[in-house]
Amino acid sequence: MKALLLIDIQNGFCPGGNLAVPEGDQVVPVANRLIGSGRYDLVVASQDWHPPGHGSFASSHPGKQPFEVGTLSGKPQMMWPDHCVAGTADADFHPALDIENVDFIQQKGQNPAVDSYSAFRDNDQAALTGLAEYLREQGVTGLDLCGLATDYCVKFSALDAVEMLPGVEVRFVEDASRGIDSEGVRAAIGEMRLRGVGIIHSGEAIAG
Ligand code: VGL
Ligand code: ZN
Image (cartoon, rainbow, N blue to C red; front, side, top):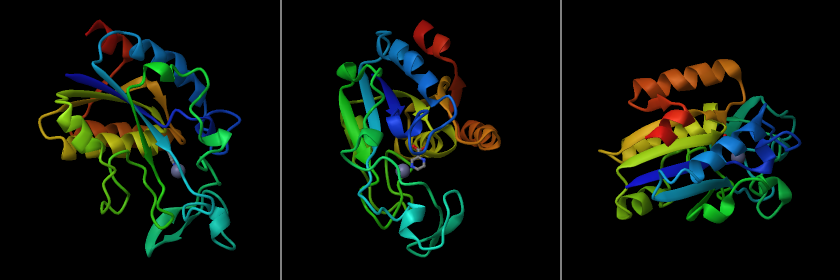
């Protein structure tokens, strides 16, 4: 049972979005090829889905600017621009993403007091989204991940997949992903590899 997990391929993380990732939109055709490849029994998409005034937004912290480190619930927190507010166009999936062939959508980031980079659990690792249980119930044995952003939500989702889904082969599809910071992307790929995540290209995933 093979599953594809598409991380946060939303307008907010694409050029023109509130937290645009360089070339973020370029993952869409690659993701669509993976979705349509017939290689996956199950396709899941995560969606960053924040309430207005979320605690990860710099605008919620007087005097803080986006991309400064601040504090949230007593822990260091990157201050982000307001992004992916639930129900806004910024939070919609990219319009060209083949969402009709996505079987399950996992929203995350609803708790204003904690950020949730991972599609599996909040950053404090207290609250689970339920995605790990869902994938276990479906009998998933292989999980390929890709999307936005490599150095944040994709990395944390991949590391949690390894930890929370023992026995599942987890792979990161590099050309179907983009990151916020190039140095951060290099570090993220190194960290994923070290923790047992396979690093592959879409061609390899499609060839099987
Ligand atoms: C993300 C920062 C804040 C991501 C989400 O999808 O990588 N990054 N919220
Ligand atoms: Zn977010």
